Length: 337
View 1 (tube, rainbow, N blue to C red):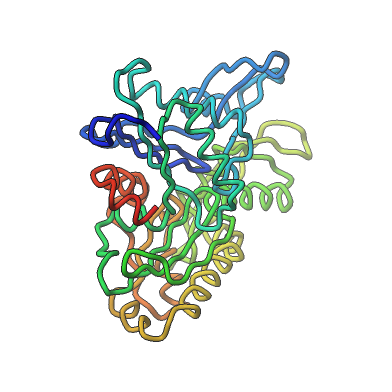
View 2 (spheres, rainbow, N blue to C red; view 1 turned 120 degrees about the horizontal axis):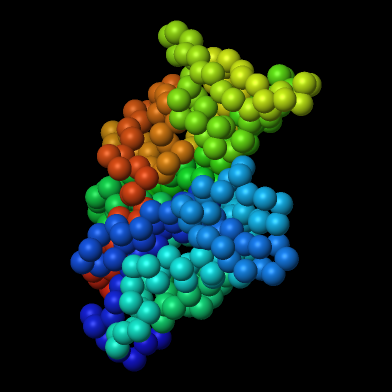
């Protein structure tokens, strides 16, 4: 721990996600939103680009360049690249040289193991943080949307990120029941790509799959079919081609993944003490995370759970905003993290 008092330190909150990394700086707010991806040369290991610039190489980079996502399913899968990525992001928002130490609050998945926690802690420290505090995504997300988590009242929050979907019931400043499945927006994209290749012998890139999900993806069949024409490679002709997709078939593709998320939420509710169930029914389910933006997902969850579901005002920012709020109180951080 740093010898300089907490109130003299520089403070940042980090939402270290599978798809994106966000950083909050105390006194400035959210200052960075970048894809969690790094481009390196395969032969030398030299880092070529980090974040957005690396992401823009997707599907375009020559063979000697590797695009690495160091966070998989909400946890560190490549320690060295995670360290490099964090160091680059932190250097963009905080002076490298300073009289005051850097303190960081980093959000982690609900089911992260002790080994995985240590990997996050060490990566953040080697990236420049003198003191690092970990907080679960659900707690940070709840704080980010101003839920009264320290009161004697239960709330359920569902965070759907790039690689994990987490449900947690929170009361009196702690989690009383939780469940996590390692799937999220990235798995939605992968399922769409696999379906198109298998059914149509047609290959689309990662960015195209993301576009399909955003434009016509849905957790339910819409009243009328929407269509989208995409470009890719016709694997039969081995030539560039175009393909027309509709929203109903994409909903069918995503249905199994949505069912897994719903099952996780229902299991969390089943594990909740009976005394808290009425609070959940009254307060409803609140959703955060980029994956929660899938069209009709709140309605699909409400249909299966018979509980009202609402989407947070800023679902993409909720977790990092929560880490930012923790920066104002060391006592609160120690109690919750």
